[in-house]
Structures are given as structure tokens and as C-alpha cells.
Image 1 (tube, helix red, strand yellow):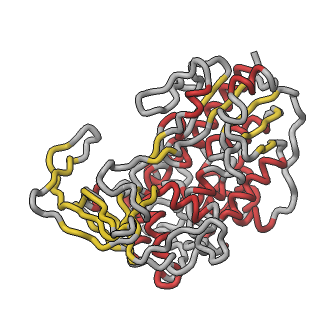
Image 2 (cartoon, helix red, strand yellow; image 1 turned 135 degrees about the vertical axis):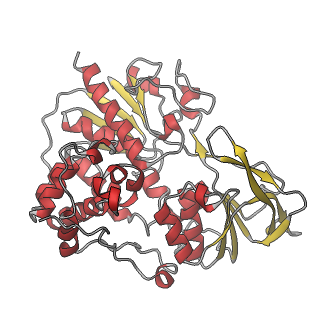
Length: 460
């Protein structure tokens, strides 16, 4: 008999007043008993609506059935048929707006905890399976992947499974892209990312770090001089946006990109860090997305009194509900319907406060959300010694500038067809380099689509 409870098994967590002082993982994961109990909530629907909500089309009811049978390794193998990064997806995917959104159990109650079960299965496999995957027989065809974020790793993994000789070129000194520089340790431990990367290496994927494509080697050179028959560009969107208000050049103003990279990749929160970060006592984070939540929660762990400044209401916050709730539980203050107009400095050029103005919601804008409108005369100051701008990012223009014939849109995103093919023959692209900043799972879906298209192109 299925478990007809209307609620998911709750995810065990560190206590909020403990976790906001450390960088250890917040969510502790299901026990075996909790996982089996949650799996029994799945009705194994005939039409499998949850699968249609998954960008990489994981066989969700089938893997959950294996969990119910206590065949956890079998469940992992089913997930791995579609996803190269199950331990990552189980932690950071917005399941509430994808697979779980279409779960039949959500009609009357909460959906099945698909993401929590995926995480459990992947963690069980990583802890208990010592066998390395079998490297497929090589077909001798070389494919280059630019960027080792979720789209690049997914594309690389899918092609490696088909026997292609795949080399991933990563600009940083460590592979993983946004998974290692953008998402904090307390949401996604870097040992998890490294384990997923090691699995791809076992499949034969080569990873070259400290390789800035467009500087060290161009895409044209990869094809014409190094013998790569196709290239996938998954270089992400690492160019930060700013508000262009007075004071943004003061000491103590960071883009969220720099702030998170220093903390996540360079471990700047450690006392012995070679690349330190200013540990603000009073921190203002501007923005309302997942990146803003990550930056604010990191600043809190560095000892700051942290305010998130967002120009709309809680209902319009684009961040995941779970991340917003965690931030609130950890003591972060939300200044809603508020927008910065200037950052003020002291006589030494350091931030001392942030001038803001109150807002109200007017008519809907192009995004469908009600447009925030300033309330004249409502200006006020928030004391701050650090201000973090979390306003989104756009693709780095380096690839476009060094690749002949590559077309981009007005936002700098690479233009592709539905299969990821760019305006240059044999060059494909996907993820944030195409769409601008989006989710990990959507980037993975783009990498998967491009891998299929590359295989079809090279098989002609």
C-alpha cells in the first residue's frame, strides 16, 4: 500500500543558530527509513507527469520504485542513464518548479520529495560503491568542451559514454564551473562535485585547467590545428552587472560573482586563506535571486549583520522558497520594496552606508511582474561597510571576440538553434553562455541536447 501522507518526510537540517556560523552542509539528508517511507508516497502514475517536468528526463518513477525495493544502487543506475550529476541535482535543482510541480500528489498535499530521494540515492552510491564505471571503447573522434560547469560536464559525459575522445577546457585552476565558484559549500559540498567529476574522468573525459579559451587557444585553433571535430561552448555567464549608481567604485563594494568566488573557490573564510575577503560587520546585499541568498548567507557566516535589499515584495522574490526560508531562519533581514540610490564612503574611500529609497508596485512590466516605482521623499540610509551587488550576470564577450562568424544576441548570449548549433559549423553552445544566468538543471538539459546533436552530426 502506498504511503498516503499529505506531507513529505521533512529534511533533517543543522539548527539555524548553529549553521549560520559554519560552512558545513545545512541539509543532512534522509536516513534509509525516511527514504523508503518517502518513496512509498509515489503512485507510479501511468503518464509520469514528473518526467516531463525534468529538463534531462530522468526516469523518476522507475528510480523511486527501486528505492522502495531497497535497491539503492539500482536506483542510481537508472538516474545515471539520464543525468551525469545526480548528487548535484538532488541538492540544487529547483524541483518545486520542475519535476515536483507536476507530481500528482501535489494536487492534494505536498509532492513526492523527488529531489531529496535523488540526493539520497546518489549519496548512497558514492558512499558504498567502490567500482569505477567502465570506460567505453574509443571511436577516435575528438570533441572539445569549453567550460566545466553543469552544461559542459553533462555534454562531456554523454559524449564520453558514446566513445568520443572528450577534452574539457576550464579557465580556472579547478574544474566545476559555477558548481565550485558560485554555490556555497553549505549548499553543495565541493567533495560532492569532485566525486562527480572523477566519475567523468573514469569514463575517459580529459580536463585541462587554467585554459582561457580565446586567450590561450581560440575555438578556431581547436578545430583547425588541434583536430577537434566539434566544439561545445558551455562557458557560462561570468560578467557581473551593476546598477551604475554613485559609489559603486568604493572599497568594500563587490559583485556577488567576486564575493562568492573568493569564498567558495579560494576558501577566503579560512584564517589562513591566501585570497582573503573583507568580513563586513554590516553588509547590504542588493538583489533577490538565489545568488543574492548565497551571498547573504555567506556574509552572515563571516560574522556580519546582513540586510537583503530588494525592490519588490516577498511574493516576487525570484529565489527558491527554501533558500529564502533558510536565510530568514539564519537571521538575515529582508528590506523589501527598497532600492539603493547611492553608496556612501568615508574619507579613506571605504563604504560607510547605503542610501535607499522606498518603492511601491505599479503596473506590470515586460516580465509580467508589477513594476516598482519610487516613493518620492522616502530616502533613508543603511549603515554598511560591505555592499554586494547580486543583480545577475551576462556571458563573457571573449568567446565572441575571438571566434570568427559567431553570432550573439543583444545581451551577449550565443545564438543557437534548438539543437545548440551556433552560426559556426561544428560549434555548439548551451547553458548560461546562451541564456544568461539560469539554473543548473536547465544548463544540463542544454548540454544533453547538444551532445545528442553533436553525435548525430559526427555520425553522418
